[in-house]
Length: 378
Image (cartoon, rainbow, N blue to C red; front, side, top):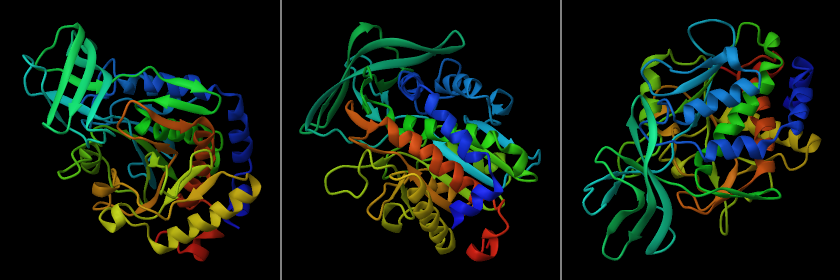
């Protein structure tokens, strides 16, 4: 029912999303995967924030880009009314797992992310990034070598020279075989591209948003050690803009694979709780809205969204939930996060754009018939 009601309220949304089948989603994703996205500096000149702006321009969003959202280190895209407070904020982090140097003499590193390497002895190609002459540059290329047994983590340089101020990130050439993509940085280039495509579709029906304002924020420093504080870019966002009228939608890739609920190629994944309740929980009314919307969307477009009833790692929702309600947790499924062989399906990104565009419109409360049915805003 929500799907049908939204189509009556936003009659051009479906057509805008259908037009996106002409886009080269792989080329856009590849650009993001090859971008420099060090945690703590993703929005510097030469970083992934630049690439997001270029892709947004190509999607017709040039006038909607906020390249520097205050001093948060985040970039953003706005849609709708020109007013101080957004009604809904969609958040997708743009940084990726990163490491800093303990010593450049022996290349020893410490992680500023969760370590999820699949074996006790793991090697993956990487690059060392530094800020030089006004922009991010690659200072060295080599391999991250991890040895769990003796608790060592090192960068072995094969080209270039190390500097103490470098940040090391994995650097694997992404490949695409049909619908399947393998590389590193899918966490969270998948969510970033999904949000960009949804914003572009909603921009086509922006006139119907009337007095509503939506903000898509691409955050830095979501990555962090899970036993410590993480989500710094989201935390700074809380002090840069007023709290949204209704709440936030958090878009981050969700882990799929054996023993897990989400499956790749079966559509975007939606969840209503993270960390088994140690993170955010979606309010019951918005949870029901999402279930009903997914049912209608899947009938019209089979395989668009799957419901993740299993475990979901915490993300920016951890901090944002202290500021506003988390209205949904969603993202394309992927395997092997924080490794050099992350894997996902391109079709799940496009399904994610459909899902996020309709879900965001519903959360913006633009369809009066949905308001009493789902107690929107309460």
